[in-house]
Image (cartoon, rainbow, N blue to C red; front, side, top):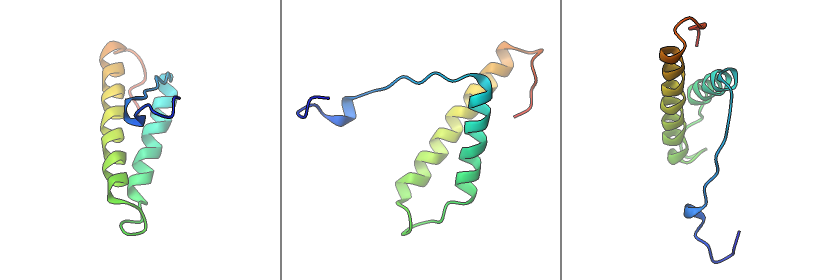
Length: 74
């Protein structure tokens, strides 16, 4: 990365299978449940965890709609 480049403009793409999404979603749920709170951790972290939980849940629902005969366990 160029030192002059704004880090907010640097993006990555990440590919995961449905099983990895399930595990990641479960871990996000656990992280939210066990989040120690502020000031131990920044409040933005909790908001980000909730945001990612919603995104992964949407991925699981999309998979369920696309693959109606597949396992529907989250």
